[in-house]
Length: 390
Ligand SMILES: *Cc1c(COP(=O)(O)O)cnc(C)c1O
Image (cartoon, rainbow, N blue to C red; front, side, top):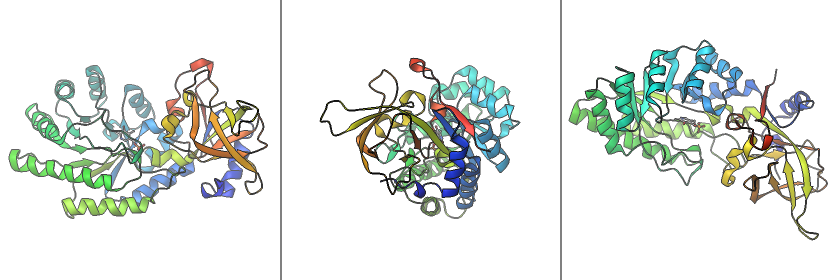
């Protein structure tokens, strides 16, 4: 049984219920206070780092503005994201273009707006950077294997082998760019802290070999995101991440660290949001079937894409007093006419035996990668709306 109180205090829960009671479902309700708290906590545990919030996790203006005020910088992946942060008065020197997959004309656009910090992982892209963002600081993203220990891996598609990173940084210098540093992302919701150890060791090797062989002194490590939000699968506390990662850094780089950048998304906004959905229908597939199918008005195409392969397991609760409800296992599915739109079938959630159509289910820790992923109106179901709690 999921204990709601493990995830949100009684006080905050009742405030949330009062705020959301009259809102139409499905929607995501964000408590900005939590985002601020998460940011300050990360700052406290990583005082030596600069934080670049990964805007894709939750691009709500209120969220971005609040983080800007708190001192965050921004990891941006597209022109619309850049336009968003600039429109909020955030200056281009606080932006990193972190997407390694970009069009030459998008590079030119970022450069024209004043961005001078770019990631890359290929020759082709580097040539475009030399041409359209001359003199900029370049960091190269290296490949890290994280597909088994991260709940939402970011491997394979991004980064290059360290040997290639080496070549790219030399090429960057030769093309008149500034060879600035190394980045990696150990995978989102990374539950194995040791993954940072491997990545930092590879980074160290590049720092040393580039300096010894080429007289290139790198000055920055971008350690990406991957820090956890509280879902059902247990994780270490952020303080453990901080202590271990600091130890890895000191082992490899001593006390005199290069500039360290973090790019958190999920860990800053995940637990600030609750996704509110309504039970559309409850049915059984035959008269003696043990499991009920519970169909919701939210599914893979309007907010819950991270249920793909049941990767992210949200704490799901009703508004009932959980101590007293008799529960049984269910299969959870979304509202569209697409049989991929099943949320959880292998992992069995338990819900009250007398659950009724029209009742609401609350997905806790739904502030990251929900609304921002729900950008089409598949089958006529609108992208999910976000509300900011006052
Ligand atoms: C998505 C992304 C992040 C954020 O990762 P989280 O695991 O959500 O913290 C950081 N950096 C890059 C380059 C990303 O693509």
